[in-house]
Image (cartoon, rainbow, N blue to C red):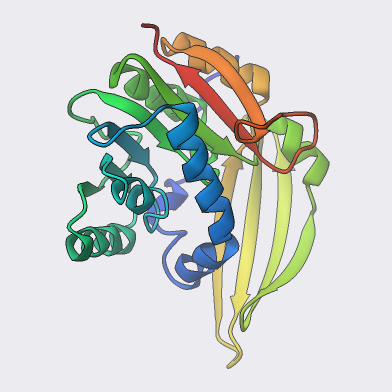
Length: 256
């Protein structure tokens, strides 16, 4: 089990996803992937209209809105006020059962019990071991007996070690992204500095930290939170995770 550490910096969710990256993040996730993830949630967890789902680090609501359109009551939480405003507006326009809340999930206490909690898009890896353990305990405490937790990550050690690159550049739309990453220890993490360059030559620099946990370390934290470790997939519900897959979907369950 990783020794809990004090955070090295203010959590990146408070600032990283504003500016250029707010829209970049939207373009990085294909709509087809979101649709498949939603289909999996309904089938695997037998979701029915009226069920309650907690969406942690909901972003611009790609899952929250999709769930609500099928009659699921969603509590959606994110650190970024712009995302929450967007989710609230979509819910208002569609008369959808979504409560969107701006809050730090490492400190937020949900009300009531949920049929499912989700944390998608690699969001949990923004938190160090102490905060991750705390968040998992909060999730466990707010799940109904027999309810599930779904975690999506591409920064577990079994993925990150294979795919780590010190330097990289990419283009998203008209923006150039120059990244320089360092793999560090105690705690194990990847720190990445990204320079966003616009066509006009304007620049924005952001620093990110992804805390790296092995499957075994995450499994220990999940069990210690009071949940049961159930499955880990690379394609939700269809293909079990193997070393070096590009993403992982971890399923835990509150004892019934």
